[in-house]
Length: 61
Image (cartoon, rainbow, N blue to C red):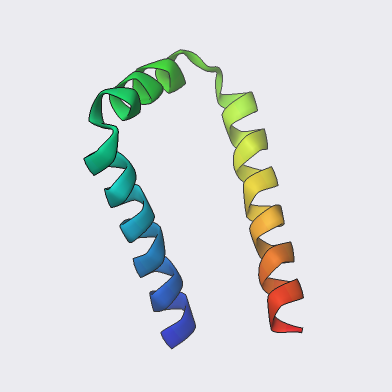
């Protein structure tokens, strides 16, 4: 559980840095995401999750 909470905290750090350094770009990105259909967003989310799991698996093995 400690690793899970550490990973979640790192996600917050990365997102926070992006919003702090590039607020207008992040706002533009969010507005563009609102125009994208659900299927491509879902597909890219699943792909990102699988890549993340693969990275963790390689790092931990």
